[in-house]
Amino acid sequence: MSLNRYEQLLHDYIDSLPEERRFWQDRVLEIERGNSRREAAALALNAELWEYFEERSRHESEFTDVVSVGGGKLSMLNLSEYLLRMWGPVKPAKKAKPSV
Image: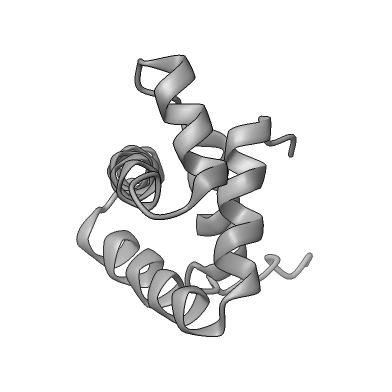
């Protein structure tokens, strides 16, 4: 999966701080449990990641530059889908039907 540079920036930031990483791992699980469909979970996580990106832009210069220049909302959908795959609950593999 390919992340855009802003998604990569946010991912690297979260990954570099253990407390943030733990928070987002728990949040991903919570969002996935609250949505029956993966697409709905990805959209919900996308919105939260963008809000977090904006919040970090008030404190971290690398985020400030992006928000002040871009002006509009950026998609975090690829990052959302990636985090759901990496940190979401493991689904048991379907058992193959025995051939008779």
